Length: 540
Ligand SMILES: Nc1ncnc2c1ncn2[C@@H]1O[C@H](COP(=O)(O)OP(=O)(O)OP(=O)(O)O)[C@@H](O)[C@H]1O
Image (tube, helix red, strand yellow):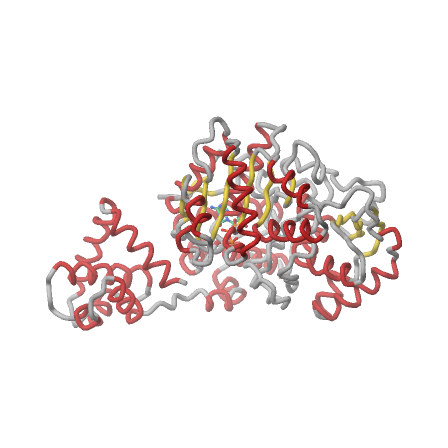
């Protein structure tokens, strides 16, 4: 099945993922992430600043900013500092909003994504209770922060999240087109009828989401929720591995709802931000405001809910918020990196609530979906770099070789285009292998036949010796076929090689086993579930 766009895509409707890191930075390490390895997503949260509260920001001066820059220099390293921090100048501050001047809107978005947290933490350490950063383009003094051609919504930085900043190293980043279309952005911070909380990424819409077999159910469920109408799935729980499009789908729901029903009060935020707001509200004795805010929304969307597992008081508050909204028949959309039942430190009552609606999985991408996503991204790059071309076969090669997650795939393509534009050559296989050597090496499948046999034997509670032995009883033969199937799809070993490792069986026996499982998984949900579980645990 071919990956296809969720809707006919208008030319140029895809915002090029320039500069987007290829993988999330490890939380809370504060370590720079190597180029191409990625960084955290910048999910801007706008913290409430109490009316009339003296924030102390009136005193903030360029000198304070200079000090913060000094601290950041130590944190992010000289190279990042020179490239991304030094060019920023202080513009103003008022009511917790710190305005910083940046050379281009793309620069602001990039800095916000990768250093927003670090900047806010630096400001806090310097004694400034900054609640929000706004990046403004240098020579556009009178510009409002929400101007359409200015730094997009993502440029409002999350405030000092408890998990600390995740500065990322600079990767070559092509400049964006000024004309990049983007949906209308959120309006005020916490006011009235608006998407507030984390900022929505203008690139993450249904139009730019490529649908394939692995994500078609999740996409259909997301669409249904986005269409509004009677609340049927509550909550909609989207889960799946890293970089498979959970956040993209959630943003798409929010954008769509906002377009369809501008008056809807939608709150999108990460679970980490939920916790931070909760802690902040406790500290500032503003729990009533907190409860009021969360209970007055029409749609609550919480990303990466696994973050609150094991955090007792946050779970407690989340539980009450959840109940209050469900009682009012308000839509809730949640995402997580695993099923609710697999979240071991999550309270049972929350697990049961998370399961009470529709739980849908985004499966790991298959070859067709990866190819579809790459083709879509190339279309966008082609608009941006009309002089560059890409040789046939390169996208197919990448789709085969980079199967880890879409973020890595996007990062690889971005790096290729950046390289090609620097050297002024077309993208061919030689350049691809050379420029992406590290990514290709890291993406090599590492699951071994031994590992698969061991894991499958454990799962079905049979002995490893039986797995490769001659017995044909069903309780052993079926797990053996499952192991053969996984070896075929998760390793690069040939059928004769797999046969040898299964007690010297002929390759036709392996072919038969694989075929049998292919048939069974279509009609036997238990086998399909077992395969999924095994695959996920082997990939973990
Ligand atoms: N089906 C798809 N079509 C187009 N882009 C996709 C698709 N799936 C993922 N992506 C892109 O891959 C990147 C990672 O996706 P996203 O951030 O939504 O992943 P995630 O599942 O939320 O990951 P995480 O577990 O790290 O939070 C994004 O840039 C997103 O646009």
